[in-house]
Image 1 (cartoon, rainbow, N blue to C red):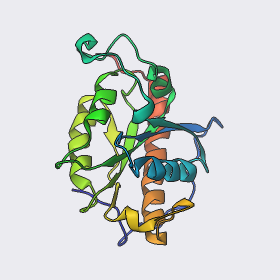
Image 2 (image 1 turned 135 degrees about the horizontal axis):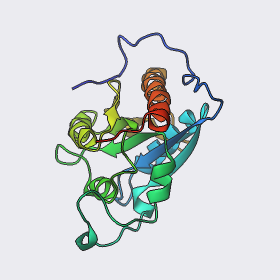
Image 3 (image 1 turned 120 degrees about the vertical axis):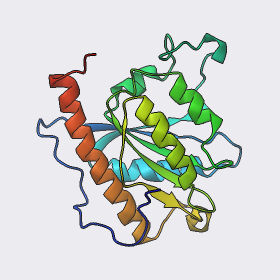
Image 4 (image 1 turned 180 degrees about the vertical axis):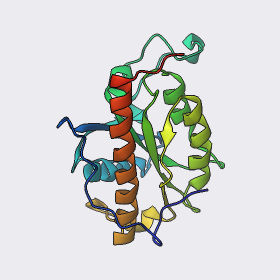
Amino acid sequence: MTETTVTDLPTLPATLPATGGGEPLRIAVVAASVRDQRMGRTLAEWAAFRAATDAEVDLIDCADCVLPGDGELRPGGSSGSPVAARIDAADAFVFVTPEYNHSYPASLKRLIDWHYREWMFKPATVLSYGVQGGLLATEHLRGVFAELHMVTTRRVVGLRTPWDDLGPAGYAPPAAVEQAYDAALHELGWWATVLRSARRDRPFAR
């Protein structure tokens, strides 16, 4: 498992890589948990706010996504969903997910499975959380993303006890967590820029 946490971080600028064409990157931050009294939404808001420094950000909350019944699913995605256009518009993704029973929530799996082409040839990073940092959820997602022709960043962030840093103003992590997340965002931005150009100039053909 590859985790970016508090030690041995590379020296990277705080901003995302320049896109070259002047058009800002579009990052979708996906909040995976739908449980009552969840902290995932608060963590996702923090992640979105920090990413918005250098990109256009859309926060997609699985708790707000009303998807059709799974009986209507077809191989290669579905005929559409209320959030399909938002996923399609994104150049990159930040998945904020807890670890449940050594994996990620069913709510996130449904969101992923209801779409296919919308994810293809785009990068993703993961901000996971749990007693052990939620990293098993991240590792399970890597295989799913590979099947969807997505690139997962090497740098990911695992939060072991984020509830200790929750307060009235939201999530206020230590500086080391901010640095780790910035490193993951920087790598995500590089992949997003490269793959956006590739999708435009050299679209994949079987």
